[in-house]
Image (cartoon, rainbow, N blue to C red; front, top):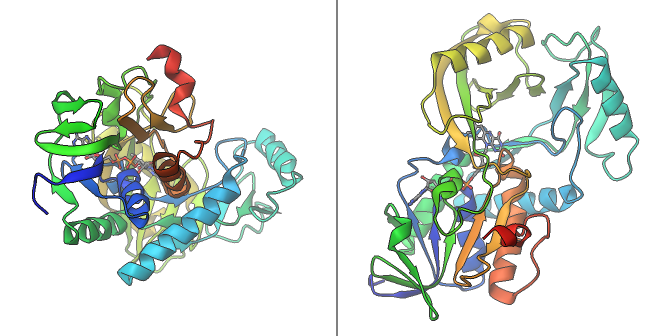
Length: 359
Ligand SMILES: Cc1cc2nc3c(=O)[nH]c(=O)nc-3n(C[C@H](O)[C@H](O)[C@H](O)COP(=O)(O)OP(=O)(O)OC[C@H]3O[C@@H](n4cnc5c(N)ncnc54)[C@H](O)[C@@H]3O)c2cc1C
């Protein structure tokens, strides 16, 4: 395709959000071009890709949880079929209580209609089924797992390159010129531009009225170095441990709201390793292989930022997926594509028009 081609949608950022939105739009025959800076700040490349529908200390769930689960299974499996490799791995999670109060939260959630398939039996500390230290006991969680995000992004990049719809380019927001008939950006012409650039969009002059709340995090990759027993399910206490491929484990994650860099630190590493010492019966069976850091594109009200600029109808945002992108992006990408292509209403919780008075 020549560089003067006209596109329906110009997407900035090829993280999970940009990749899945590009996929949804092209499935409906839209002409899409994606620009990415080589994943320079991609949190998708750092993330463990955990899928955990019961969030936080109180094990709350969103009313959208079943839509999210249905949609992610369909999308990741469809892409796996195309790629000939699996991206989604279902794996049960054992949640560890950290206080008597948390046991009460569990009991309250367990009785709620609609989530019985997510929340399992209470487990006593005496006969806890995994080699972990669980002084308060815990419970089983189902419909949890993880997504092989770097593999998925690499496949999506290859798929786009074969169709001439991905370019390695850093976009300067000031080079974007929206007008009545479309958007231009360094000679590229498109009907619309969509920002999928992760936390960097907090500096985007077109959308600087959106309250991003970036959440920097560090994560470790460990490898098994002995035969001592280690968990074969996801363990989630103050720290979480995820068994991944080839005898590797991911251990995470820290949260720093005052940092926006992707430099792992000695103190972050120590904090996570201390968490592992408290978590495992045999922490010496794991050895540190690497540590990574990234910035989650989190938001002040913990809801995504999706939709159209209130005064610039050619500019859009698909962002703000915080710590749960693997779970939520597949469903929101379908909704965003339906909004752009057919004008179907956006989910109100995520629509950026909730902040339009600040624009
Ligand atoms: C330590 C850590 C652990 C995490 N663990 C999990 C987890 O277990 N489960 C989960 O669901 N989520 C997790 N997350 C969050 C997850 O990473 C996000 O929810 C999700 O990946 C965000 O995807 P995105 O595409 O919106 O943003 P990103 O992945 O950040 O993608 C944005 C892309 O845009 C590019 N870009 C930015 N600016 C420009 C520009 N000007 N021009 C061109 N390209 C640009 C970036 O380089 C990047 O490639 C974790 C994050 C961190 C940091």
